[in-house]
Each structure stands twice: as C-alpha cells, then as structure tokens.
Image (cartoon, rainbow, N blue to C red):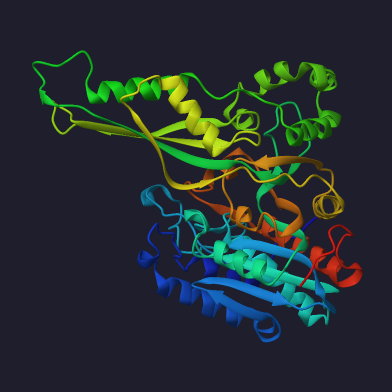
Length: 456
C-alpha cells in the first residue's frame, strides 16, 4: 500500500501552488512575476536537476535535456504544464485557491491536479535518480509548458518546433489526460486506468447574421436573434453521427473482461453490434464524447434593447472532433444542417485536427505495467482524450503517445479540475512520484522499449 508523501515533499508542491501562474489569452497579460517565483522555487527545490540537466527556456516554458549514455537516441519526452486556469468562485473554496494549504490528507490549490503536481512529481523523481547516481541509457526530455490552458502557442508549440528542428524522435511521449477512476464505470467494481493514445480535434464555429434593424413594434417574420437561435437549435438537434473508432473498440475489448455478464456479452458482439453499442454510449455525456464529434453551443449575442430590432447577432459553437472527422467536415456539417444562406460561418480561435492514434505497443505496456505496480488491482484500458492538451504539438515526435497519470479519482475529484476545491491527496501525490521514479529507473536500467529507433 502506498504511503502518503511526507510534509517536506507536500510542502514543495504547495509552494508551487502558491505561485498564481494563471493562463491569459494575451501573453502580455501573464503575471511574469508569478512564473519567476515558480522558477526560483524549482531551482531551489531541485538543485541537482538544475546543475546536471540542460535547461532552455521558451518564454516561461522549460525544456530540460537529460543526455543519455547513448545520447543519439531519445527514450522519452515527458510533458506537463505550469499554468492554471483562473478562479471565479473564491467564496466557495474551502481554502483560498492559491494558499497552498497542506493538511493531513490533501494538498489544496488550483493546479494540484491540473497540472503542477505532474511538473513537481517528475522533478522529484529525476532529483532522486540523480542523487542515486542514475543516468538514462537514452536521452530524456522534460517539457513543461506555460500556456497549455490557452492552447500552448507560445510554449509547447515553440518547444516542439525546437525538437523537430533538432531531429528528435522519441520512443514515448507522456502527458496528462487519462487517470485511474473509481466508481465511475457503471457495473465495474475495480478502479479503471485509462491510458489515452491520442486526442480529439478542436474547432469553434462562429455563426453571424446582419439585418436592417428598426423598431420592435414592426418586426419582420424573423429577427437577427431569431435566425441565430434557429440556426443554433438546428446544429444542436442534428449532431454529427455516432461512430465506433478503432481505439474505442480496443478500449471496450479490454474493458469487457471486467464488465458484468450482459454487457460482456454485448461487447463480445462489437463487430456486428457497433450501432447498438454507440447508442448505449451516447446516453451519457462522458461516454458519448468517445463515439461522436460533440457539439456545444457556448455563446450567443445580439441586440441592445428590448424595443430595438437587432442589426446583428452571432453565436459560437464548440466542437471536439472524433478521429475520422475533420475541421472542414465540421464546418460543412454546420452549413448543411442550418440551411440558411443568410448566415455566415467562420472558424475562430485555435483549431486542430484529431491526433493520430499511435496504438498500443511496448511503450503502452510499459506504462500499463508501472501503473499496475503502483496501484495493484486496477483494470487497464486505452482511450482518447476528449479535450486538448500540449501533446498535439508533439504529435509527430514520438513512436507512441500516452496521456496518463496514476492518480485514483472519484467523481468529486474530477469535478474539482477547473472547478472548486481542487486538491490532490498525499497518497495520490506519492503514487505520481513513485510512477515517475519507476519510469526513470526503467530508462536507466534497460533503456527505451524497442519501437521507433529515435534520433537525438
């Protein structure tokens, strides 16, 4: 059984949480002082890391290179991010979100799960390995972004470009995304570890319409607001089709072993019963996201006063794109279902295609094996990240991509991510450090799994 981290280890994470490294859409609005305080804390807490690894900074992002005994091959790129999302409900928190409170059970604060605990856990493991005189057989990179929560354009994208230009190709890319859930999968008693092998794409479509306007006492058949509302309703009422992709079929095949009898029998017929399975999964938002490009109207605007016909109205609809669909097919779908030539459609903000799915291989089995050692008795399956992570910027830089952290979370813990009372238990933090320690020991003793033949 894993023992909780001691007070000194918990305090190192808590001190990082006290640095309010909040993401901002405009890099000029970032609190540089908070990032510099975090930099000073990391340097003071992990002196061997900063003495023995090469560190290159990209704005506030940190790219460490740990040369291997055989430096021309790269074992892994380990990703995490230093930034956090803002807090808009201060009064609802048990402890202030940037106070970094440590009690007997938890380390409290924004970023405790997403994602400073992974930054600190990786550094704890590397510092320990250096103290023990370990060195990886093949080179290891640590890439800690500073703007993941706003899509990583100034951090992860620049670090990935640097690695690409250097000809780096790793055997393993490891990032956030999957965790071990307890009591979430209906009918499954044991905790389930989901090692994600890729992620969905991302697009936001803006719909807009312009009308003449005028006095509300003499409206036409439809106002600008009415047209936009009808268009949004049509998009929401006509979602993109359900589909069972290979990675989700693999996920279900692995889960079948621990499912109750009736579901196990249904999953055994997945080849012929895919439409039934996808309809069952579509009944819950958490599982629907695995079998469909999701549609989420998020913003609607129009009008200035109750007695004035609006001249312009607009709406924004966010899509998370399933492999097999594309940004272009999402835009075409919107035009098709709205059936209103007077409405303009355009992509706004960041868009990304679904990542390639690398498939389970030696690197996946390595991650799964270490997860089972750290948290015995778990079921391990594959999956796809429904959100966006920094990993997508590194998509072509590794033979296998895994999004996973070995922390055991229940429904309430999951709700705290980007929500209220984010916190990580001392036991979970110990698991996270132990997982990274075992991973680094593997690189130091047997090198990387034989997959892609990486270059420095």
